Every structure is written in structure tokens, then in C-alpha cells.
Image 1: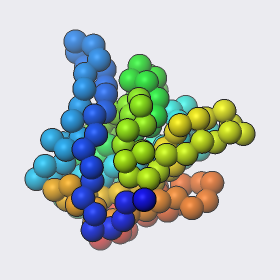
Image 2 (image 1 turned 120 degrees about the vertical axis):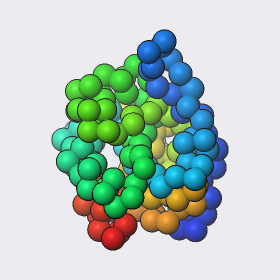
Image 3 (image 1 turned 135 degrees about the vertical axis):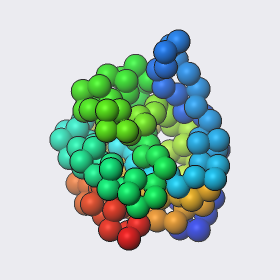
Image 4 (image 1 turned 180 degrees about the horizontal axis):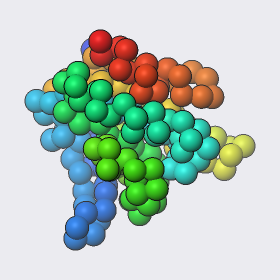
Length: 162
């Protein structure tokens, strides 16, 4: 079942490359008592993700923070090494976006957003979405319905947070 507005986000263990190598990141801890925007992409360096989805959030990260968002997190079902390279290539970290790996697709599966894009060779990935959660409760839910990132993009999230 897909998550919906008003639901609580499930716990998930995500990963990143930190100063001492691979680190686990407990999503529940990141959400506790905070306003967080999470957006997911099918894959780092893939065309729409790289040319439109991430750049929109990089461009509007400060505007989201100005509306009270404590953290913007991007996830993808990629390994943490790929996500670190993508973070550096896009300037996400420099813009204050936290880029986290969902290496087993745990979060994508738990919220009903796991998908296979057979034609593109992307198996066990996450559908494209964006959400705003306050203290772990989903306040804005934007699953992408088309091939682009209009619903799940930064402009739509900024407008929805109001």
C-alpha cells in the first residue's frame, strides 16, 4: 500500500559516505521533531533526475528553508558511493541537500514506491516522488504520475508548503 497524506513515515536505514567511510543513517531519527522534505529519484545520473529533478531542489533549497524546512533529503536506490559522486556532481551538498542511498530499496518498498523500469534496465528502484513531513507525519505527498518531475519537483513542493 502506498503511503498517503496524514500517514507516519516508517523507519528505514539509509546510507551515505561520511568522513570515516560508509555510515548508516536512521531515517526516524532525522525526522523526529523536524520539518523535512524528502524527494526520491529512480537513479542518480539518469536523465530527468540529473537534468531537472535535482537541479530544481538545488535552486530552491534556500526558499524551502525559508518556509521552515529543516532539511531537504534526496534518496535513490543506488549505492552510497554513486550517491556521493552524484552529490558532488550536482552541487547538492553545497546547496544544503542531504543525499542518501536507499541501497536495498527499504524506504521505497516500505512506502509503496518500489518499481522496476525494465526498458531502462533499472530494477528495484524508487518511483519519483516528493513529500513534506513534520515530525514524521506526511503533510504533503506528491507521487509523480508522468515521466517528468512536475508533481514531485521543487517548485510544486515550495507552492504546497505555502
